[in-house]
Length: 226
Image (cartoon, rainbow, N blue to C red; front, side, top):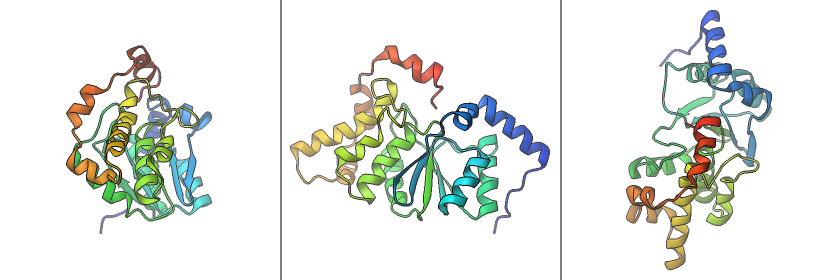
C-alpha cells in the first residue's frame, strides 16, 4: 500500500506560490472557481486550490476527484491535490490524453467512457479552467450515465456559466458531439459508444473543423487554455 503524500512546509509554500501565480490560480481563487453541480453528487470545476478542495470535500462529502490535466506527479498543482486527497481519503484519479483544443485517441475515449460509469459519487471532475475538458467529460457523463439526450447534455459546453468558447479552437470538442448528432440523424438509435467504435475518425474530424482563428488569441494567449 502506498504511503500518503505529506509535503514539507517549505515545499507546500513553494508549490502554492507557483499555483497561485504561474498556474493562474489567482483568478480561480479570487474571482471564479467555475464550480457547479451538474446533477446530485456530480460536480465540475476549474483547478481547485487546496483550501477549495478541502472545503468542497467537507460540504459535499466528495469521495473522488477526477483530474483531467496531463499527469504530472512532480507539478505543484498535482502534488497539492494529491496531498489533500490522501489527507481526506478521496480517490485521486488522473485521466490523460485529453486536451482543450484536440480530440482523444479512440482507445483513450472508450476507456474514459468506461471510467465515467464507475466513478463513486459524490465526485468532482476538473481541468485547469473548468471550461473545455471538464465540459467534454460532463457531456459524456450526462449522456452516457444519466441518459440525457445528447443535445441537452451538450449544454455542458457553453459560454455561460462555464466559459467554453465554441467558435475558437476549443470548439473542436463541440464538433465531436455535433458530428455524432449528424450521424444520429441519419441513423436513429445509433449510440454514442457504437459511433465511436465504428465511425470515429479523429484525424478526419480535426481536419473538418473550422474555427474562427481570430478568437484563438483569446484561448491561447489571454486565457492560457491547456
